Length: 529
Image 1 (cartoon, rainbow, N blue to C red):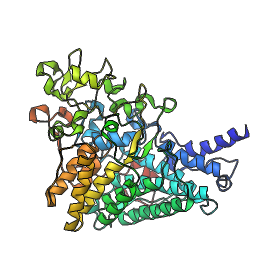
Image 2 (tube, one colour):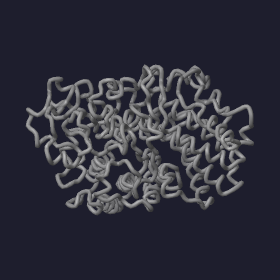
Image 3 (spheres, rainbow, N blue to C red):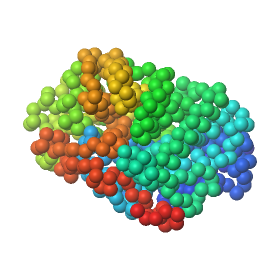
Image 4 (tube, rainbow, N blue to C red):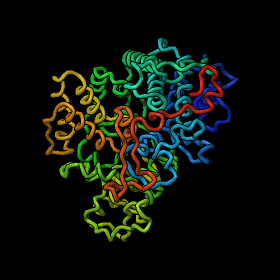
């Protein structure tokens, strides 16, 4: 009973803010855990501190209800990946009309938008809880405290990178980092007025957090258990360092940390690649845990992304951009992750709903070959041309762990960074592509002799197909200042009419999400943009 009472205290502390109800302007900064025990005393106990840092992982997979979204739930990192990165990007088509504001960036410049408020409140909620651990845990007290402290620093760095990606300019447009970044809140007292820090200051803080985290991970002597991929560790810190440096265009740092991050994570083999991207394997560096006991039901990522889910995906499957699919070589196994419509005649597709519905197959059975590959596809599923078979849930209706970092991304980061370094590094970039694409078995016929811009374009292309559906499209297009082009079937693509638009880098507030109005109401140290 005593143990349960203690556990309840820390759970109240870590999860007291688990629902983003926007009840007051600063609710996401409220870190008072209990009036029974002081936080300083609470965090002298290693078990309490461990519960708290595990609570940060839990905050990344919780249903959040924003009243401005008519109680449509968003679910931590799952929604960030799918709704904000892929639906907003250039490579995923999904016939869900309610998300057109995200597809087209309509909500991006609106200070009262629930979509914009969600990102701000969600990431600062994790930051505020991480700050409590960082403020009260003494990393010098024990090896375990060092490890816990390092984990909290990694979570905070992860959140600040995402805030910068959403709410700040591209690094190339930041005047060497002098543009406004975000509000840096770094301890438990940072709950009142606080000005914007420059982008340079924000990125330097992320680097500082990761430097300290890596140092404490190493000093702790603790390694993550094999069945704890959902717990952040030193390799995740390396991977986050690489992704941050890539976003900052710090090419040497990006290449160095990408190599460190992938060192202990061999690329998955062909069999693992076809397994459904739903179980941590040798390539996964850090992931989000899921199980029957902890499923988010119809709000989960798998409800929209898993081809075998009996939830929304059965009627609204995610599909690859037809124009991207057409570029994938026939010898590449990644082409097989999507439904090739060439084996069906146009009469097999229901176009009664017009181009807004895409090519929905109206037959009663899949062809024998496809049915043999995917026997677990729901009998009630609506099958679309180019629909994805990359992801599947491990239990119905929506149980599916998903990765946050894997070594394929690190290969691509290192290769892209090498392209921006000296010309002598291009050979290393080509070798990295060879290892990722040819040697792994993804495409046994792959070769590359390209250089200069053609080599960089090659890396960009393989990022698009390797990381498809994993939450990268919008981020990559933004940082590179690339134009998003989505075409209807009539124009060679497969997007519904209300999402088939062109979005240039200078459009829609230069792709910066507007700071939510409630932050200005709460924080008098910043001026409305």
